[in-house]
Image (cartoon, rainbow, N blue to C red):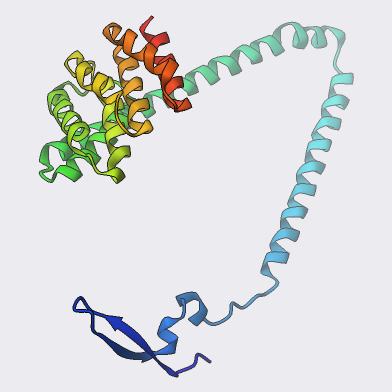
Length: 254
């Protein structure tokens, strides 16, 4: 049974004074400690036993099929065996290849259709959103769902550009460097070269994550005017990730 003893816990207030609060000791325990112990039975063991029996049956059936196939093959005439080897097997292989190709096409079509539906949903949510933080969250998700491509986002590209640029410039708190970094890299997705000066400035940010993301954004834009700056960062930045991103960006620009 859980103890019903009561414990006095100090409470601190803004004025500096302290008081105590009496509460049951049970309320201080984690919830899972208050639950009754689980009851165990033999069901898991019986489940494993049934699984083992099923595997043995499947193996036995497979062996039986192989033996039956060999038995039937040996009783076929030589002409029939030649036909199977020369024509039936190649035709079956071609059929399998065609079926696999059709399955991949259908799967890709369904994936694209689901992507378009999700994109349309996010576009509508982005247009309706009024709170800056929510709008930024939807914008990040929108770029990701769209496969980091600008095509399909033309209706909101100016709004996305302004939102990401504002975030990169104004989200200056230490804990917001990841948000600024994402904004910098996603600016490169929009194919808007007007943001290149902003990304060049971000290469001098105090946070390595922001600098590496700015290099990624410049690489996505293939900003030839950033070659000199990226070369300097690649050679002199103290962070390895920043140097690597700068090198990748230079390779994409070439």
